[in-house]
Image 1 (cartoon, rainbow, N blue to C red):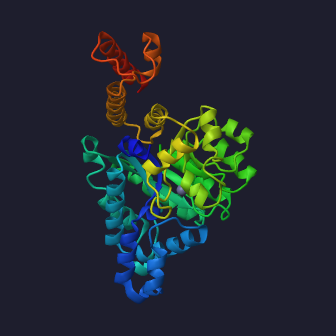
Image 2: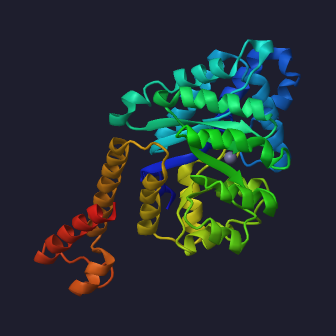
Image 3: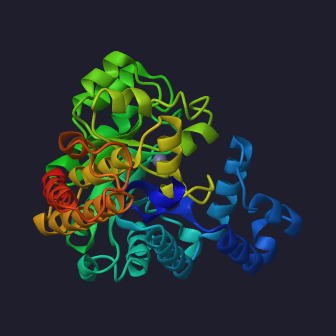
Length: 382
Ligand SMILES: [Zn+2]
């Protein structure tokens, strides 16, 4: 199934730039900074080694990332590399998110940081529609920020709407910050025509969840602690789910008990995402394969799940959606053709035509009939 998921075109809607950096790049940047990072070489190697991390190790890595991403050129480099990695994983559209920060010590402002990110996204924005992957940017408000800092991020996002910024996110340590602090900025974002996504329900906080839902965000992330009633209230809001992130941060006990099952089972809009692919040692393909395995979903179900994500992107341009739908239509046709080549027509059509199981049935009239029906279905699905 992993091989199938790697070949599947995918849409990534919840990926943090800093959490998606390659381990090798962090090692290299740390080495170039020498004593400035305050860690022995052995410690840096241990923190950045490939493999699954526990929660404490994830925090150590985030701390190191914070120390090595202090130059504009570094920000541009990591943006370029992260996008390259997603494109290599057959992601055809990504909304990467990052928190613009002022860092006076290194001469960085929120705006200069944003410019550095966009420099790394060159080739994936306006010129990107005919390329392998399109990229857009979501600016995050950190829960440690003040109302004024949050408003400054929204002002910046509004000014950069024509340059690839499509939305605002609220993220950071869920135990820090009061919801009321961020409401003026999030409301302002909505008034400015920016889309809004919120990290929600990472810790139990029914009062905050109620307020978040009242704001009617365009998407929600994680929703780990949502009760059945809260999920029902969020029924029409697309939800970004990141299974490995939730497992590593101990929000869920196992893949099999992940709330994807409940949300998908209710027919709610949902999109699989990576959150922090570098820190959690994952890819979007792996997340799809993990979910397929944990919930016994077949190729057709995974293709359907991936295709639906087009409806949840923040870029409102009809042209972008048309391009993406075209890529998924092609994927459906390839999949139907592969099923036919194995001798098993589309399930429903096979039953109608009396074809059983995966028995080869040769170059008969039936195969052409099934192929035609499957191709029509492929277009109808998208
Ligand atoms: Zn996140």
